[in-house]
Length: 218
Image (cartoon, rainbow, N blue to C red; front, side):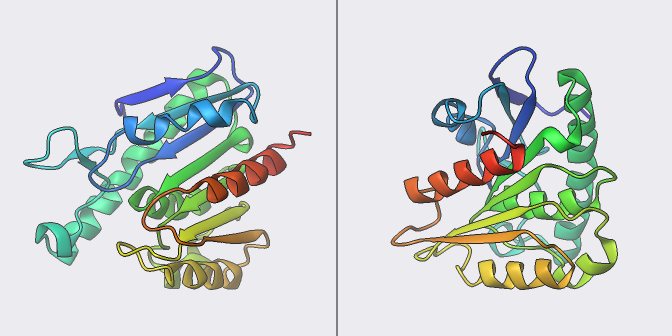
């Protein structure tokens, strides 16, 4: 599967950070984070794909799957779209890791909003474990299935703004509880005070520390 994507970083990286954007955004939305992160994550390439589905009437806007209360789709259409996106993302990830010469243990998925939902769903179900998952302002899809379906249990950092009016901040403790119940031993959380549906400096600082730790960067 080929997803259009943005890339920043060295030609022969030792590790990858892969940004998964939110609903209605595109690859450009998060790739700018590569600049402030690069100095803390040497030998790292940063990639950000466009989600597979363009949103009708919104030029340059993409979705991982339809959201019924936004676009009027049915729950069935949303579910089918999510499953297609999982397949597309997994195929793209396989291709990128091969092209970059990097194994799963040197990859972090960094999601925002709907991209977090994809990250938290895909990472545990892959054959090889990622170094970690950074999950901003999203929620865990199908928490009731996780314990039975998880093959890998990578370290997870959950970050959420306490003023988020798009995805409620209560999604963070709900995700943490489900991850821990499914046997994830390294689940970390940070609440960004006074922050809405976005990424604030304090959240990014916590994410940097987490990524350096799971990558083993001294």
